Amino acid sequence: MPTRAPTGFAARVRATISDRQFTMKAYQIVSDDGIDALALNELDVPRPGPDEVLVRINASSINYRDLSTIEQPVPRGIRYPRIPNSDGAGDVVEIGERVTRFRPGDRVCGIFFQDWIDGELTVAHTDNMLGGTAEGMLAEYRVLPQSGLVATPGYLSDVEAATLPCAALTAWNSLVEFGRVTAGSTVLLLGTGGVSVFAQQLCNILGARTIVTSSSDEKLARIRELGAWQTVNYRTNPDWDAAVIELTQGRGVDHTVEVGGAGTLQRSMNATRFGGSIGVIGILTGGDVDPLPILRRSLTLSGIYVGSRRMFESMNRALEAHAVRPVIDAQYAFGDARAAYHAMRGAGHFGKLVIAQ
Image (cartoon, rainbow, N blue to C red; front, side, top):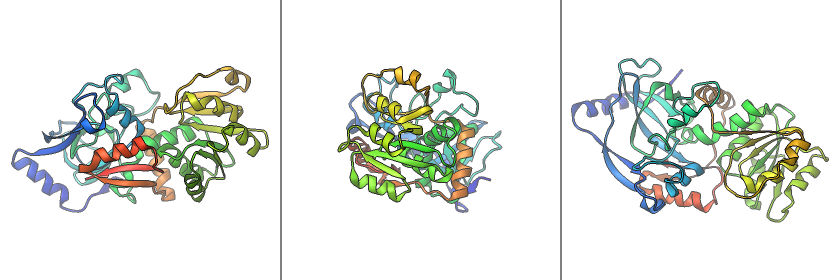
């Protein structure tokens, strides 16, 4: 069942919107000039149509994709002005006349692909991506179709829930939907960003053991505290694929959550067992890839592009059953959003960065 906001809040805001012209603050990409050119503008609060929901956005988390969109909107096919950020959580303020899935006061998260409810991802789904081909969540209010929302797990705050739509769901899709990771599986995680930290927490639920790479001994110590079985510092051990093979007694891992991109994929393939799988997620590094190990090791690779609403709801049930709390590195005030993007660019975070109202 959807969780409820404090009694009276939604009614007060809804009355305010109904009684007079109402405006909101929203960040917008307005040029190709990057983070510092991100504009904080005043816009009209949108009104919901018959099948739509007006949501007050209380928190929005940042993903590397959001940073890339701000820094390179034109190469990514983004038309501006555009509100950035795919991830957001808040509460329902007003509903359209045909809305049946939610009521005012319900706490909700938006889904990355607004039209991907279930089944396979199609080209049509990419026409409605929050913070990309559609307006994003870094605003005080957003109108979304009722089908493009999921109920927030009741035990999480909005700041915590705002981390789920992209990073957590991407990790879930790679591990559960594609990788079929189960108790006793061994999983390789690259780095300690949002996807990898969520993947560690999900592996704890699944009973899988993990090997995690990072260039920071401090971050490796933190991921061990979260349950990592083994860790490898790739800066002091550049042949980290060989280290993974050694840690698994020559076998390799069952599944790899590959967030590095072309620059790490070759070693990830080397570190994955014969017949194993690799969820290809990241674009952080460039380089050339020799496909021969895919053939010789009978590997299965799949691009992991977030996930559907059905996956999101399945993940939320698992998170709630185990009371998993997202790891948040830092929280920024809405007015300090640019500082949050600079922190993402600095790549010193462990877990997620969140902007809160």
